[in-house]
Image (cartoon, rainbow, N blue to C red):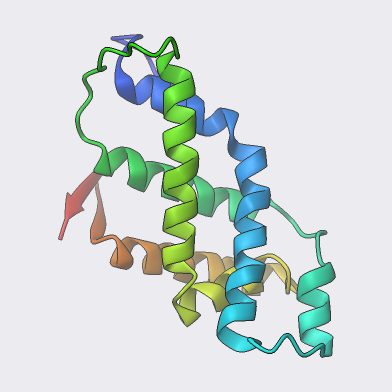
Length: 167
């Protein structure tokens, strides 16, 4: 567990907001994935067997898409490097403000990623078109690598510590 040295640090509150919205935003990620598939591969919305499976599919293991969600959470927190809380005069708490900002940012990130065929294909392989665990694991690794490349983040692991570097 993370030891909180400064409980009112922006990153701790932001992380709590991201995890509070996790289940809701996982559903939003699947919705945006279906939308991206339609836009890229079936703009006329012609019904075939694959498209029917994608539209009607809601049952799949969520652990893979949860990992992608958490990676996007980390990318967002890394991009928001300022850890100072601002003064709010509208009566909202910082937690509520971060929830709203994170939801808007995630949807923007997903729509941006959804314009790339590689992202859409790998997300489909591990969610709606899930068939085997090995293919889902392969797709998850490729999706993580694509996200890191897309946002210009390089993860270097040395001596058991994890360092993030901007390329």
